[in-house]
Length: 179
Image 1 (cartoon, rainbow, N blue to C red):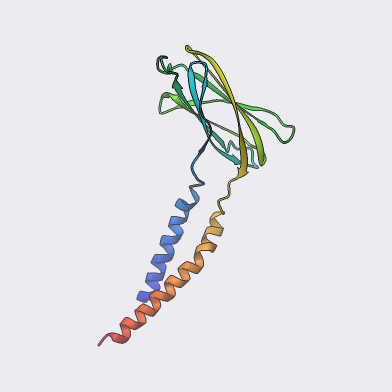
Image 2 (image 1 turned 90 degrees about the vertical axis):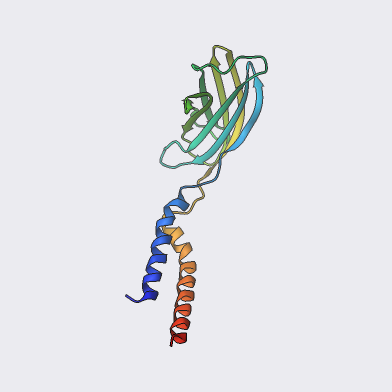
């Protein structure tokens, strides 16, 4: 194998291996409710509302709780329930109990299936020794807009080809200048 072909093979392998890392990210979650005071809590809801066709739980919700000034810390047994319901059509409400992230009662996570694009009403209920509180918000679900793995390779091919041609030209120049 010539040096030009081996360089191309190495470059192509690097591009194909990095495709998995490119696919793994769809963007950061964003807040749909920030620091709403309800009962003894300051409640924030962050979401990454991806729609899925296969019924998998693509709608991700993080609930961040902070005690209102003068209240003790969020107790360890705090139960956070997230309910979503479609706003643009008839459909069942889906409910899930959030789980603490890294054991922190003030930061909880749940994933729920969102079966179509469009608006969903989001209701969060918090229940603990500090009392019960409820807040509502809205999230607009969209399909995960990342291209498939095969399309990423197709999109990267022109850049890989240009890089290979550039390396070929540089290799030929180097050969021509060699004594």
